[in-house]
Image (cartoon, rainbow, N blue to C red; front, top):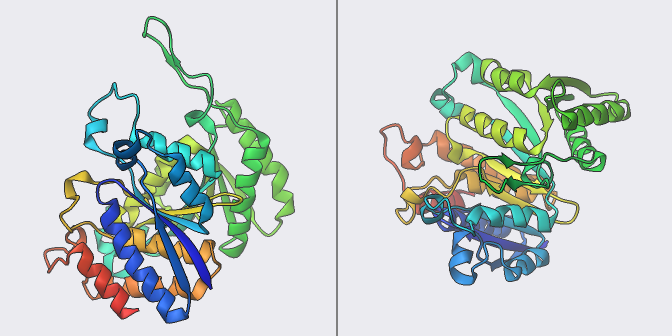
Amino acid sequence: MEMNIALLPGDGIGPEVIAQAVKVIQAVAKKFGHTIHFETAPVGAAAIDLTGDPYPESTHAVCLRADAVLFGAIGDPKYDNDPKAKVRPEQGLLAMRKKLGLFANVRPTFTFPSLVHKSPLKLDRVDGVDFVFFRELTGGIYFGEPRGRNEQGTKAFDTNVYTKEEITRLARMGFEAAQKRRKLLTCVDKANVLATSRLWRETVQELAPEYPDVKVEYEFVDAVAMRLIQWPKAYDVLITENLFGDILTDEASVISGSMGLMPSASLGTENKLFEPIHGSYPQAAGKDIANPLGTILSAAMMFDYAFDLKDEAAAISDVVNRSLSEGIVTEDIADGAKAYKTSEVGDWLAENL
């Protein structure tokens, strides 16, 4: 197969971890007989420095030409520490999602046998955890209008808006995923308070009869925030709106023991983007110490979700598990043993594929 992949390294450690994913992708391509074409473009603070725009039209054009997008991270302290900055790297992320129509963020949470002891949760709570969030990405309070402040600057407001169509397309993805897993779907909302949540719940209830093999549960977001820590194995597929999903998926990310390990996908009707869930980690930029596994596992998701190449995805997951069990890891999870450089981990994975 011939594949065109857009690379958006972004800021901080983004370029370093993307470079390791490229090594692994090339090794997979060689192993399975594929041809890969890469095209690189700036995004985030790197794009602001070059063009003044965190998601320039030239980058958008590269993404549209690609079969899939592999994205690193966005964020830079010079913008984080300037609350009056009119242009921010994060605006590029929101613009990218909106322009590419990436309405569903898929965030799995699972544990690695060799690292289960690093989870902040007790072994009996975390061993065997395997669930996935489907978070709506292009609606809700992050995009709703109106927003702003009053003339005096003493009152601020944001608007949470959802349409039935936005909810339906995300919910169908969740139902279809549940059919392929443990056939359990949890709709996460705040229907006792919010009108948008009541629309979410009503819409999911209307869809449920179309998927009779899937058991559907409805839980308030605050209860899920609690139960994710109390008993995460109770969940399989969870669907939720943008803000709730943003918070809950970050909470879920620490269950595995390291944010550097978790991948994600952002999917639309036409376009598909894959990225690690961690941030740009500017303190580690250029030091060759960042954990590249989240990005590499995002590449595995890319082979699965973008190209339906499950053997290639499994090959990456298997070699990552081998690297963890054999201690070929970066300093964040080395536990006092030898810590390998970011580039050394990438080299080992590519060689051992």
